[in-house]
Length: 171
Image (cartoon, rainbow, N blue to C red; front, side):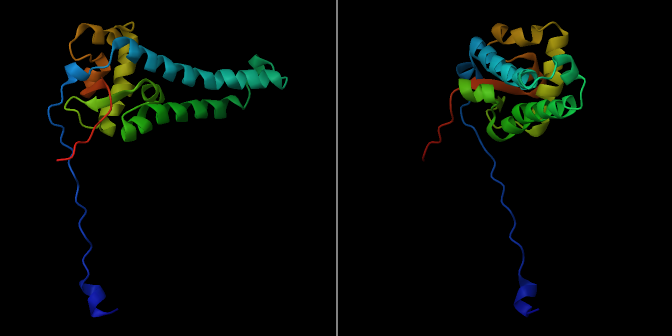
């Protein structure tokens, strides 16, 4: 090796911290019915996977009961799990939105307006959603009762769902 190659030092990666100025969750909070619409879209997409599998199986002559008990149900279950992980964790991690939120113009952000972390999304969807279901869906009704429009899963994860899009201003 040359002496020059020995002296090269790898460049340090500079991380840019996102700072949101004048973020107001009360002003940007997502309307409750729009949140319900986004959730309904996500639910329909999730449920449509096994329903389409049953319809296709029926069309090719397989009885639904046999289809559910066959080896095909394992890959179908895997597809459902992968879709749920993609829609509720991976997409929101990169975009702040699930498919339903994309279609309705909603976005998940941290309470200070920055992008949610993977950990906060895990808490939101794997702890907050089941907990809201366990208490008979009351956790989903909370946005109607508070000024920032936060549901139980938002309180647990430190997030809020907002309506609108980001505009980057030039200085």
